[in-house]
Image (tube, rainbow, N blue to C red; front, side, top):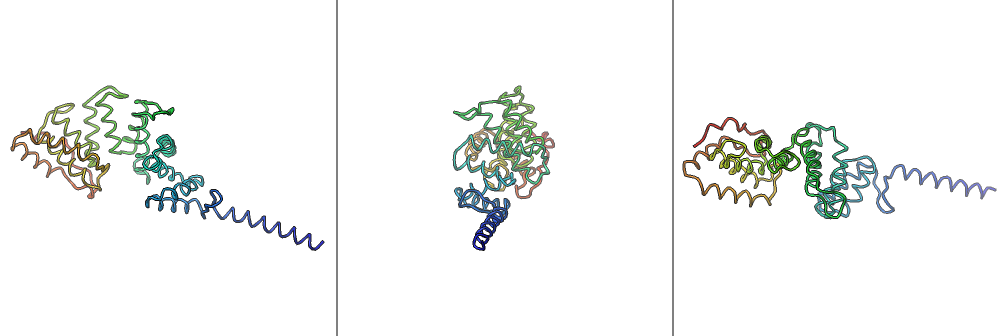
Amino acid sequence: MRKFVTIITGIVIFGCSVVLISAIGFMLGPSVEFSSPEAAYRQGMSAFHSGEYDRAIPALKAANQGGVTTANFALARIYKDSRKDDLKAFELFDKYALGHSNAGYKHPQAAAIAEALVEVGRYYRSGIQGTDVKNDYREAYRYFHHAATNLRNPIAAYQVALMYLSGEGVASNARTAARWLKNSYEKNHADSQALLGDLFWQGRGVKKNKPLALSLLMMARTNAEDENCIGYRQDGQRRILKSLKSINGAVSQKIRAAAMDLYEELYHPCFVNIDLPSIEGVRSKRV
């Protein structure tokens, strides 16, 4: 009888130990254990920043299952940039963005939320081949516009401008496109500065202003080479340089001098983190 009681007691103690371990240890699978969802997130992000994605994925999944929804954003980046699984990336970006649909520009995760919205918008703009995610310009515009207005994101504003210039999902309107580009120009977004420079060069949606066009392209070139700038992308540098070279070779020395004056008036390094002066104040400076 005593032996039977001992066995039963041992089973109960063992069972309680298992329950206790399960409560203390946050588990994902038989070989991955984290003390909490937050610890899983920290480990996942450490591996993410080190490029150790095989370690990052299970940790971030564990964090997400434990309620750390920010993990979805990092997972989406891995599936998009490393695993090349666009459908999975789309689903994760969308889930993260929709989970913060009421966030404003002061939200601590505003930059990540806006990036997720922009990525989903891009997927809707192009569609994902071989999936149910089809090209949908109106849906793309809705995501871009939300990030541009609610989160004041310059990359999203640039995408909205592109849609107004091309007439995708909205009626073509170069003046409205220029207005959006002016907003993102002030945030030192290189692509917006370059495209706005092209519009001023052509007089499309704005009054033609060659010195201002050239100065904006000069700013875009500088910012495209600065990792501190929003939307910094090395692949955008060649296109901006080509446009700058084309315009620079077509103007007089007098226009170049006026453009340099404007450049010195308008340009501020990205690390200063202030909005640039409004472009409206320099419109009278024409040659």
